[in-house]
Length: 343
Ligand code: 3PG
Ligand code: MG
Figure 1 (cartoon, rainbow, N blue to C red):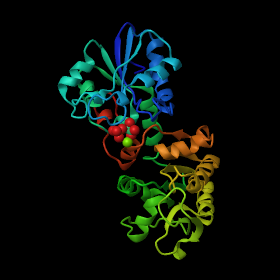
Figure 2 (spheres, rainbow, N blue to C red):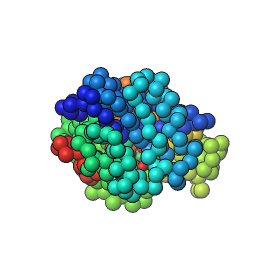
Figure 3 (cartoon, rainbow, N blue to C red):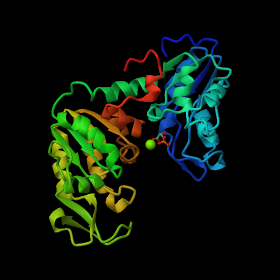
Figure 4 (cartoon, protein in one colour):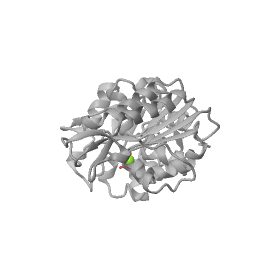
């Protein structure tokens, strides 16, 4: 977009303003703040009007609970400019997720050019991410460019030791990344539900470091009876809901030695405070490491933010699924739709 002549032009921007909501307000504005540099640059360069669009949540048609109003208000607090507009949730129109050309035409109507800046959504081939890019001159925004550069470093030659840390519940989503990147990692540390699955059956052509001890719980409940147990001594019927102290130390040693780190996914049921310490220990170790460190995914990002460590990593990605698909080596439709992007 730095090369686009935007003076006097009407610009449509796709940002990822899909933020968590709570009590009718914005619960975390990270993605809104991450979208500001692109909007600011367009305004500084005298764009006549900047219309920002995004999806919010997964509404089934029009639904006031998913209105963009709270997002609009927060954005206007952060960047007040009469030329800036926030359009209504793109997913209120059923044409959005079908990449319906008629909806794409509605979106581009009255605009001269398009800027794609929604890194978190470029893995979706939707009207606002792909359809519009085929109707207007399309450019990559600053956040999209930076995300591709930072995450892209992991796809090229990396400095070793390269430590890959993976956790969380969406096991199948993450196996692809391990398959693509795990072979070039010197250590692959696995926690969370993913560890259970790989312990039973590891389809990967390399070894992974699994937890030796866990925070064991008598049932899957926030207030369950809990104690530290060696994995091999887990009482029958009990569940490991976090990595234990011995595992935290093992993981921290690997992380401290690393020159390159990618971390995605919590080590346990991080939303329950009694099972959050393992994830926090990993967050602290990654923040402390003197390495090129990239963190992706909402829970890992939240762990860092809650500890005030979000600025202590090299790159905190705004993408969850999009970051994973990029690192899996998949094509991102919203990037492929931008003619000049050769990423
Ligand atoms: C995300 O939060 O992962 C992106 O905004 C994409 O949202 P989606 O998974 O509902 O398409
Ligand atoms: Mg997602």
